[in-house]
Amino acid sequence: MSPNGRFVVFEGPEGAGKSTQVKRLAAWLQAADLKVLTTREPGGSALADRVRDILLDPTLTIDAEAEFLLYSAARAQHVKDTIQPALATHDAVLCDRFAASSTAYQGYGRGLNLDWVASVNAHTTQGLEPHLTILLDLPPETGLARVASRGRVDRLEQADIAFHRRVREAFVNLARDNQGWVTIDATQSEDGVHQAIQEAYARAFGAP
Ligand code: TMP
Image (cartoon, rainbow, N blue to C red; front, side):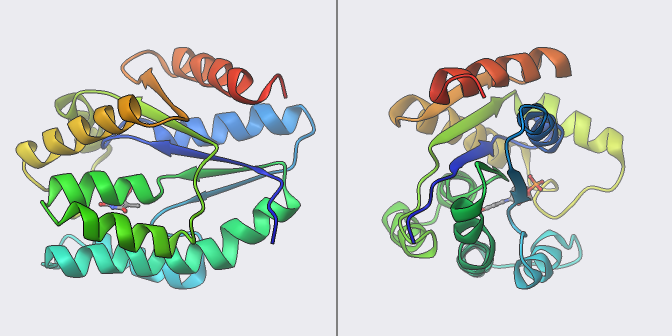
């Protein structure tokens, strides 16, 4: 299959506002008559949505290796069921988190072997890499306070602050060291973040 669509991934620590910004970017592109699919990880297919429920269940204790393999199982199915087909039929696929979340959360956050994480990621993504990754960056304290004000806190959000600091630092370093990443200050207003995302999209692909 030779995908034509643009694959845009949103990454970031907890409470960065990714889901809101995915919706706003989709609306902006659709207003320009582009065909857009939005999806998210873990999730985006029937199996992956069920795995998501397990992964986020705050009553479960999940071993770090098992956790990574569950995210990976969800991703393998999501790539085949949803992302690859959509890239062949849509102008853009916007995905809330992708393999870099496993690098940041399971690799750097949980301390799993980074080579193993990279190797499994290469398989579950089938080598598919985002054309653009938008990092919505903010301090973990700010993001976790936003999440707490929404009410129910999931299993990952319950992890200690040192874990969330490692995750944030990993994302910042990934954005610095890899091509195709853009970092946006997510402490700005929602409109300010959306504006910065529009500019990043237009710089990467031209005006929609
Ligand atoms: P969300 O809160 O952005 O919907 O993401 C769900 C949680 O799953 C969030 O805490 C980040 C975490 N996560 C990982 O730990 N590894 C992964 O590979 C992915 C995709 C998400």
